[in-house]
Length: 366
Ligand code: F6R
Image (cartoon, rainbow, N blue to C red; front, side, top):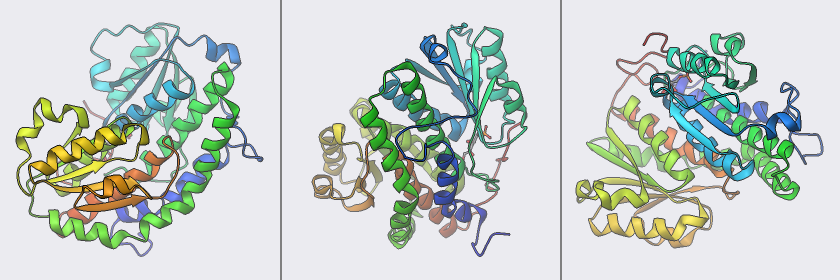
């Protein structure tokens, strides 16, 4: 049942190329120029009348929502607010009929996400669920559903569900931008052609798995690991830190590069591992200065960059390379080495990778 893999988590990490292909192929026109969402019955007016998008979810799905904010605001130019479901439901939110509420949930059963969806609907919002489970409670409650075609996810730590959520949300952003007229056709074609290359490009990451294994060995005795990034890489840093915490039990924290000197820099001492995500070209120089700040305190820095990124490579101790693609598409691949790092660190520490302590796959009680 594990298809020759030692754990479900590793199997599911390696299933990502197929899961990504399955989630996108049915939603890209045959000529590759635009997105088609047969399941969404939206007119241009429907999308134009959305004033605000509220995204709400828990855990890893919430981290997918944080990235979707960048996708939607940059591509469809609709303001987006992202909220943790258990916070949203109790904060007396400003939601009305001009709000589109997007909930994200792998299982479709997370109680806080379901309750947040009901609360948004009660306040008059329209709703859309991005979920992996047909017929789940959340899929039945939402007005519209976009399925991720990841297949069953067994390991508690979410991997292929997250990457397929990113794919679905990026396609959804393009679709909204197409309908409300905010999206340039050339940009759309470029993003789609990059997206279609992702399943094959993932293999290049898997080809370097031994490097990641080596970092895991190096990190196994560490007490803290820091993840830093800016823009979309900051959202990915949060996901990388969560993955490491939940299965390796090593304390990990994510910081926006610019926030370091507002507190966290005090914790950076000799030998502390810092994973510096620097895939986003527009903030690359700023990331380089953040990397220099932590290097000056003698941290051990692993840079995660797109291929050919020599400037960052010059100032880090080790490097993980992501195949070259555009800023919108790179996050879908950047997370894969972070998943593998968490996985191998948990394995070398002898942990029960698929069933980490104290955690359940689906959280149906508050
Ligand atoms: C982390 C993880 C959790 C889930 C969260 C939401 O690896 O799996 O953080 O993402 O419990 O679950 P769903 O997506 O089923 O609503």
